[in-house]
Amino acid sequence: MSTLLSDLRVIDLTDDFGEAAGRVLADLGAEVIKVEPPSGCASRHRGASDTDGTAFHWRAWGRGKRSVVLDLQTADGIDALHRLLASADILLETATSAERTAWGINVDDVADAYPRLVHVSITPFGVTGPLADAPATDMTLSAAGGFLNHQGDRDRPPLPIGFPETANHGAVQAAADAITAIYERERSSLGQHLDTSMQAAVVGTLLWTASYAAVDRNPTFSGDDRADGPSDRGGEVVPGVRNPVVEPCADGFVVMTFVLGAQGNAAFAAAIRWLEDEGVLDEDLCGRDWEPWIDEMKAGELPVEMGARAMRAVLDFLKTKTKAEIHARSVTDKLLIAPANNVKDLLADPQLLARDFWVDVDGLPLPGPFAVLSETPIVYEGGAPVLGADQMLLESIPEPVSPAPVAIHTEPRSGVFAGLKVADLTWMAAGPLITRELANHGATVVHAETMTRVDTMRWLPPYFGDQFTPETGLPAANANQSKLGLACNFAKPEARAVIDRLIDWADVVVENFRPGMAARHGFGWEQVHARNPRAVMLSTSMRGQTGPEATMIGFGLQGGAMAGYVDVTGWP
Image (cartoon, rainbow, N blue to C red; front, side, top):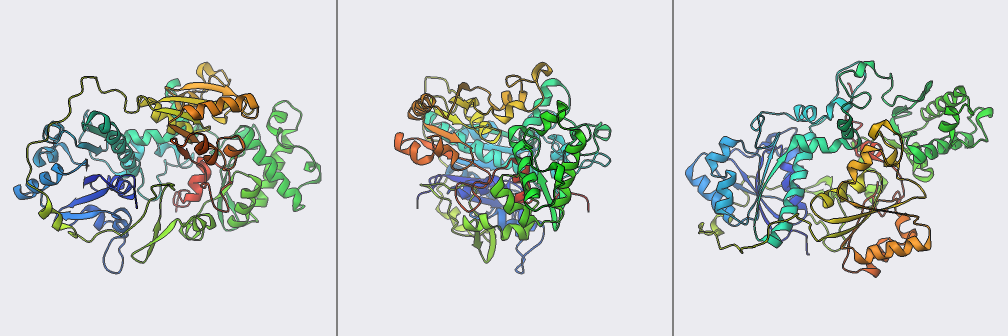
């Protein structure tokens, strides 16, 4: 079966900080050769183990790789490493500068010896600068990248995620960087060195809050003055009305978004209707349109006391319902409420089960494909290898020879995606951030927005000049760097004709609407493929395009809760 990277060989010299990079490339079909010391790589010895002594951590992150043992303290081991590099397309390493020198893999040495090799250094702070070889832990990386200060209570220290996770952001970024460089190599015939900083990758996860750097202040609750902020993480809807974020329910916790433009207003109104349906809402709160409740309180048309009472009623009601009951209603009624899932919840999740997400690997259920690819699916053919399982590879690799001549290109190497045309039909963070990376690498990206409902991201603070308009929101500007903009009403035939022309022009089409909406507007996969069979299309959504809960709406908060992050983050 064809896979995306089946013709690539990757040499994986990473420690457990960079393990995820090789796993992603292996998932996509590359041959990933893990080079390990005689005692085994660090991931083999991390955390709890199976009955046979294999660490579960290694079972997860070593899946799909091959294992070769080399003693890089010896000349023979280093010689064998370089024979592997001569046959490779990508080198992944998390080495210190001293180790790179000792192993003969300094940046210039690799470029001279293996001009077609993509060399990826994954380090805490990058390979240059005053912190180039500074030590780091997962927690210090979280702190240095600005993530840690966004979590915890106002009266206690910042709170890390319950399990090491931060370094994985850098490792997965490195995998994406490597694939990007391989794409560029098809044009230039040359490899290059990629300097992936884990700290920088963490900054990239801050999304809209990173925009506060442009106005030289911290978002509420995330600075050193967090104790002076509101008592609730979400602050207040208006003075006197709580804005809840994480709240208890009958058997755990749920997260919710009731303040986020039109989507938040609709979610709160839907929650109120649920209380009405069950006959537990105060009579004077029944029978009114709650969608404009925030504007009405600000205008004095709705007493703040009534708004506060309605919010308390919703939160008290949720305490009587289980996570499953709340989730079922949220899927059908778009409540923007999601359960804080634990591992047992995830294993029984009906959406994950319907999409065959869990796969059996050596008798253990492990997470399956991170994406569904129509023509080159991710297939798992084996688990993590035993130490040295593929030692015979060393016998089939020829001795290093002088590098083959590389084609000489007179034109300068331009942006990786120069000439690539992208129809960007996305909104609200996840989609625009994907296409931003294509644009920043040289692609021509046309971002089309519907003006019938302004992208919620345009209303997120902070604002240029502290002026609150759709044009001054810094998060929207940040997410749409380097793009061209197009505004139209997707519902009008004239606008549909413009979108059709955009699709005809594009090499890549990206959308992140709730499944079904793109098709209703004329740019679902079947419609795009019929118009432009050569186009690659990416659809990204909360729960995927198929399954019983495909149409659930949500944002990062809901996704993090359902994926298990919220459950493992908190005080004992």
